[in-house]
Amino acid sequence: MIVVLKDNPDKRQLENLIAWLKSMGLDIHMSEGHSSTIMGLIGDTSEVDVDLINALEIVEAVKRVQEPYKNVNRKFHPDDSIIKIADDVEIGGGNFQVIAGPCSVESESQVCEVATRVKEAGAKLYRGGAFKPRTSPYAFQGMREEGIKLLLEAKKQSGLPIVTEAMDISHLPLFEDVDVIQVGARNMQNFELLKELGHLDKPILLKRGLSSTLQELLMSAEYIMAGGNEKVILCERGIRTFETATRNTLDLASIPLLKTMTHLPVIVDPSHATGIAHLVKPMAMAAAAAGADGLMIEVHNDPAKALCDGAQSLTPAAFADMMDAVNAILPHAFRG
Ligand code: PEP
Ligand code: MN
Image (tube, rainbow, N blue to C red; front, side, top):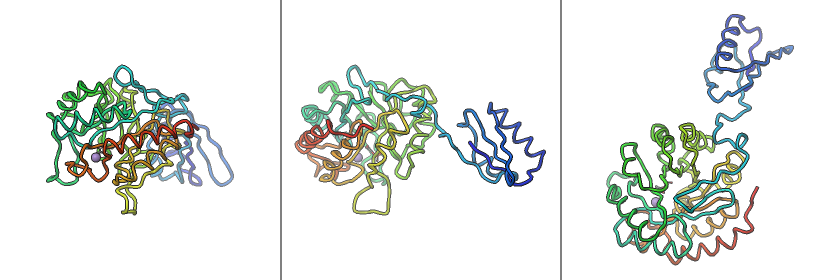
């Protein structure tokens, strides 16, 4: 971090600043020029509050030259992280995996039928929402505890590990047998939830917030990792822009960019990114080509009757067709 001081800084205030920075374990390199003095802060500056220093009377400007995250930073972990799920699914480091299933768990027959179909098409993980974050309080809120039981039944029948969203710390005891806990876009900055997930020994699928920068996504992953849980998978799911023709705007460039910033696996959810079923296949292909470590796809046995997100859900047949297209691209995918 570099701190540029104003001309003729007050000596007392400068001494106080230096003492404070040193108390944080930093070394300071002073460089006095003709018109200004520059301080180079050497050491781990991730806990230094830039805004606080910027606000000091003697400070002209502050610039970070080092990222504020360390556990997720590729600089300190050059190799790709490979996250192991259940006994035999690995994601990251060249292992591409597809998570598929309905937006919401609706009934035992629905959840078990879709599980069998997506498994046949090559999905290695099964998704389904039991707790649903809905914009309207009058919309279907999910089957909650009963939904998790049905997902576990689908896991028993299909053998696929399950991924489902937790919205609140108080619900976590229900997630004991869930293989991957999803943090949805709306909860990406639920810091208390992230801290709690940091204490678990379970993979976490962290979705990018609707209006979050990549740095904010990485800082949320940092919360989980700082607690000791290193099993974090990132998910690009589209961001809110001025465009209304699609539900969100899929930020494809985030895939190769995130992979230079972090060693964590990055998957893409083209279903929520577009909101339109016929756009899911081309965007899944594009994500695979751009180097994603996997996909999350919404699949429903009868999309027209889905209780949630039917417009973006693929039928099992369309999902199988998408899988063929994605598999054909994988050998040519960008790998950095
Ligand atoms: C979901 O995956 O079911 C979901 C609600 O997605 P998001 O949090 O990305 O909107
Ligand atoms: Mn959905």
